[in-house]
Image 1 (spheres, rainbow, N blue to C red):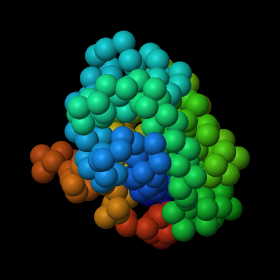
Image 2: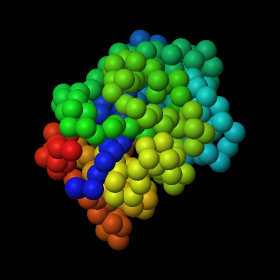
Image 3: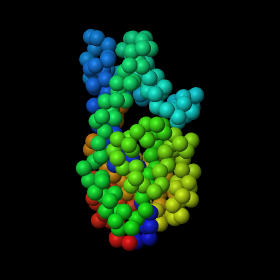
Image 4: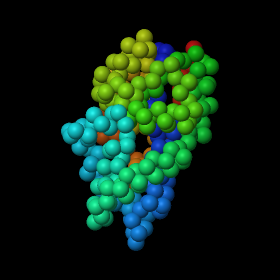
Length: 250
């Protein structure tokens, strides 16, 4: 790690508990605005079924361009499909559920307890910090405002604002250009092997994989695993403080 000059972070489930907040948001939305006669946990399972079918199609359909600009239309469509799984066709209810979910998810979003400490320690050690995060521009900016960490980063690359996201290699090239560093001079810290670790390693960067047992989406049942035939990360950690132990003061 001695060559590292710049540190980039992922946002969701690396610095903050996005999926945990999403689960809270879904339960509260279905409790408040969901169909009568169907409990919230059943509706969350219907949401997961709809998500597994809808999310993989975004980039192959006309939804992706809309998704990059704002999260509302795809969020509402996801809820419409969730209601259809339950045998309900109600566009107004879908919009109301989507709005309630977004509000409650944002209210529940929190940094991991050590995140701010680590960001400030790295900055004090002289490491410029960057952020590379996927998602619509409006949602990611709202998250940064809610968490109060935007000013910690000198470089912020958001999928919705860039027009492309991880694991596209172009994202990592843009980060190199913005940072003035390249290859082993850059460390990426992220929670997703597929979207963070593998493409960072392919770019020649160092990569620390943050693995927490809570990192499970509502549509999943267990944390992500690395395929045995793909390269290992530079390091694996379960707490961001371990990153400080791996990086020397500059």
